[in-house]
Length: 283
Image 1: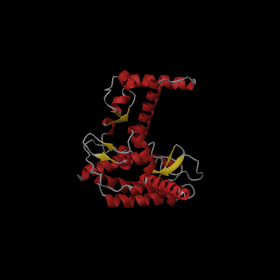
Image 2 (image 1 turned 60 degrees about the horizontal axis):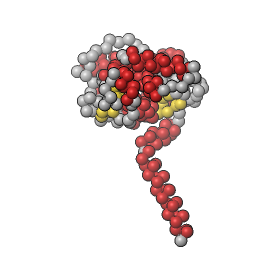
Image 3 (image 1 turned 135 degrees about the vertical axis):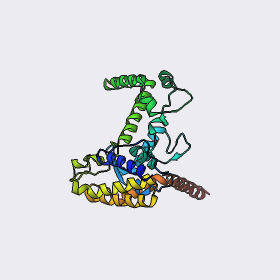
Image 4 (image 1 turned 90 degrees about the horizontal axis):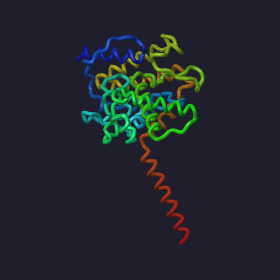
């Protein structure tokens, strides 16, 4: 088991830092469903130019891919957004063959020869569809020419965008957690591209915590995972204090993401209170 964990750790460190290690399909990572991902969720990431918690990015990503905020795999295991994004990045699960990419339009499914009773299909199944590629390419050409797209073309573009997002999550290019050193609007980079902004010595503390994080995740060690991720956040902030979001801002967005129902209830009760007061004054 120790050898398997070492192989997995070497593989994922390569994904994070760009070092080449041999991978093994025999690796058997531990069950991480009970791990507390709060500290990981509070790590800042740049997505479409906006700095946000990984928690927000992970939830938005899973919703874009599947139409849902959680995913239940073929074995019946329920995946939360943070766990999914980290697992996909580190390849601890066969995500390419999970039927999780949303295709909602029946006419497109029919044209692609897919089962019309299904709503979700695997990355491997869709990325190998030459017909989907043809329709999406045609739709892009029409869009560049400012021509109207029909429903099938619109849906094909949406599916194509989901596949690109999925690929970016799996290859790590979406995990832009290394902050730009000077301007808030400058592009952040993934860990394997740290040399664009920082020296080996500057990045060393971050790499150490990434290695510890990966090791703990591979073993399902929630305590050391949370501790390493908390320290990782501090080290990332130390790289560029002026561009890294303040901790209270990240925590506020994290709180809002997890208590949407609470806020809706507060608004409803507030509106009800206003109505009651107005009705009382009319008497």
